[in-house]
Image (cartoon, rainbow, N blue to C red; front, side, top):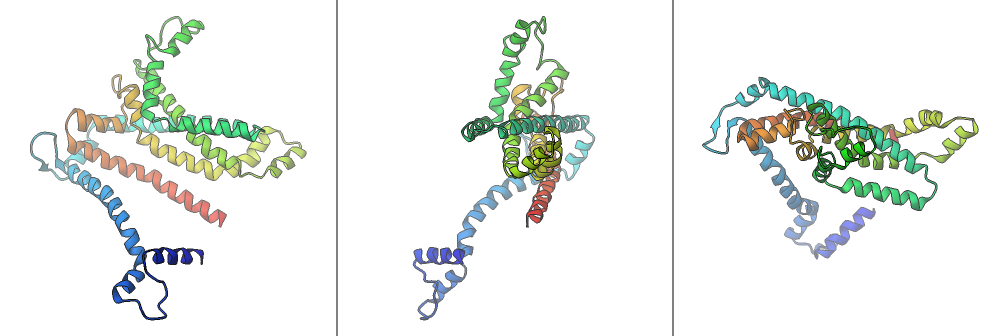
Amino acid sequence: MASENLLDSVRAGFGRSSSREDGEIGPIREFINDHFMFFVLTPPLLVLGTLVLLPSSYLLWSSVHEARTWGPDVFVGLENYIAIFQDPMFYLSLRHSVMYVIGSVSLAFVLGLTAALAINQVASKRIRSTFTVLILLAWAVPLVVTGLIWRFMLHSDYGIVNALLVQLGIVTEQIGFVTDPTLAFLSVVVVDAWARAPFATILLLAGLQTIPEDLYEAARVDGANFFQKFRDITIPHLKPQAAIALVIMCMFAFRTFSVVFALTGGGPANSTRVLATYIYQAGINQGDVGYAAALSVLMIAMTMVFITFYVLQVQEDALDTA
């Protein structure tokens, strides 16, 4: 009823009455009145469709052509896709991407859950709100900025991390966090987890605040300790938020580019080469737009797996709360 009144008010604002009792509405106004929502929604949908369909169409078109930054485009069919599955660098990048997702998302989730539990234990609502705002500000920092900051902090010559380790006597010489192949991969995983942890914190904190306090009070009366309450109360109630956080973080970590590119550029010796940086190398550095487009199509198809899990999880949560 409220939505109908709102619609009538909007129609009235356009000089159209929602009533037809007097028969004074002409055929044009009657047509507009009957298709009001169509005229309202069509322009934004056309703009959105154009912004999505045109790049997507060009991406698919380029993926079946030998499209380079120089020379004419030549139709090659599925040759780009066949070349991808014969390319050892593709499998190396894919393996790095999977390892990156597992390491980054796992660490980010643990950090986020720990921070959410700590903030939720704060008794003062004002202090709790302050911490929440600080977490939001940390989340708002662009990933490329985070990568550049950590690149300077981890620098082997003038980085603050190496300086602190040497000053504390933990190491005797600087560590090549971004120059050693093994340490470089670990570094980008840790930095990415650091950047994504605030998202997990906000989502999990929202879930924690929906858990009735009476459940914890009853468990305390029964003599349950912190770990028992966490296992029997917190985890079951946090499953929906945890599942959504994990799926979203996996989706974005799989497509990651900014942190890796800003921190290591995919090196050293391709040790941090993930799918996104490999696409950049093929399309920008090597000028093979068709091959990069085919890689992008495959990457989008893989990302759709995470999107499918996300949609299914949201639908399951909606059914549980219905």
